Amino acid sequence: MATLQLFNTLTGTVESLTPQGTPELRMYCCGPTVYDYGHIGNFRTFLHVDVLRRVLLQLGVPVRHVMNITDVDDKIIRNATAAQIPIGQYTAKYEQAFFEDLNALGIQLPEVIARATECIPEMVELIQKLAAKDIAYQVEDGSWYFRLNRDPEYGKLSKKDLEHIEDGARVDVDEYEKDAARDFALWKAAKPQETSWQTAIGEGRPGWHIECSAMAAKFLGDTFDLHAGGEDLMFPHHENEIAQSECASGKTFARHWMHVRFLLVEGRKMSKSEGNFYTLRDLLLKGQRASAIRFLLLSVPYRNQMNFTLDGLVESTNAVDRLRTFRQRLQSQAWPAGSNAELAVTIQQAAEKYTSALAHDLNTAEARAAIFDMVRAANTAADHGLLQADNAAAALRVLASFDAVFNILEDRDAELTKAALAWAEAEGRMAEVAPEVLEKFGANSLSDAAIEALVAERTQAKKTRNFARADAIRNELLAKGILLEDSKDGVRWKRK
Ligand code: AMP
Ligand code: ZN
Image 1 (spheres, rainbow, N blue to C red):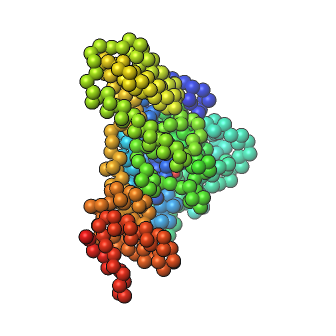
Image 2 (image 1 turned 180 degrees about the vertical axis):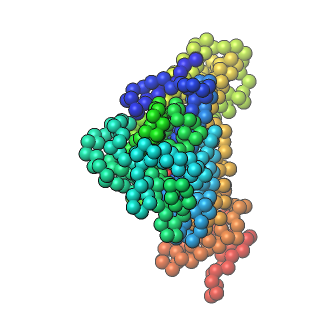
């Protein structure tokens, strides 16, 4: 059986990834900060990690996969304070949404999910270990920092030239710092009205980096096989994790590092102000299918930058349909007994190309191409009456093995879109739903609240003289059997 060859950021080479010391491969992947809904860039990373674990499982390697949930940080505290609710209540909503999104995208759950707020004692212990070596030091306000110049290996992951490390210069922000090489916060002293924990190192809350070091050690041990995340985390987050963990334990932290390159949208960095920022939910409400989103985000290998476009999504939708139709065709016809030898070879070659593409640094693009080669050949043979029962069985086996990784053949799309609609309704976001989605899925499910939201939107549209939108809403509702009557006292509606 082949072993997975995977690029290792630490060594800069493609190496075998195999479990060391335990039967299962121990891996840690940085999870989300649950202060908002995840965007498709986040999910590109989680999807490629999903491919990694599925390929390992397919190669017969069991995995123990740990993912953290960052449920305390500056943004969370800021937003929860603004909403006047405890941080746990604030993050619970986004954590649940994150798991719903993972499910919608067909991403397997890790074996262990660890919340930062539930591992504070382990973080404190780690800081104490560093303090005992004089690598962690406390400053006047009670915060703790990591003394960077005590780690001669600092920078080995990102290979940054960090000669200009300023002794004692400090940084205490949670926000990503692109080029700062300074002593970083391990523990932030409590501020009035902010969530904090009373601990042996004082009252406060953890810095972001210490969270992953402590949780990785708690669930995987000091040394483990693989650490993964998006490329933006390489520096300083992962560099700091290595520094904390290796200085404390004196052992190698993660042997292998995997980084997923960034997702661009329509050729640009995703940003709300550019209007190219998408959550999964945004796309579902616009009528895009979850399966097509998954397939598109996996179409470019993880080490290449990917440009997500709405055109690409159209192609991806067609590609998913093509594969589903092909499987249906193979399953639903009675093929003549026997095997077409030439086609059998083609199918076999496609299967080998598929397996070796994934085993060689998770080349999802080549793996996918191999499957489409098979589909083309088998369809052509079938059109000419040259596909036989053994070929159909062999092609179905290859498809099943493809789907154990790509996971798009089962059609859950309508169900997932309906779930997104129910969410939009509950959140008062029906105005974001595309008319064709309402038409297709909303007919019986339009609740009174949803209708009222649309009626209110229409009234607003009329006020701003956007008559086109107002008429569109009237027509949409009519198509669903809802009649509007404009009267002096406002708008009345009734179901036909
Ligand atoms: P966050 O919740 O911001 O900590 O991000 C969760 C994961 O998504 C991390 O592994 C990030 O590196 C990754 N990520 C964030 N933005 C993108 C992007 N545009 N493309 C790919 N991965 C991303
Ligand atoms: Zn992390």
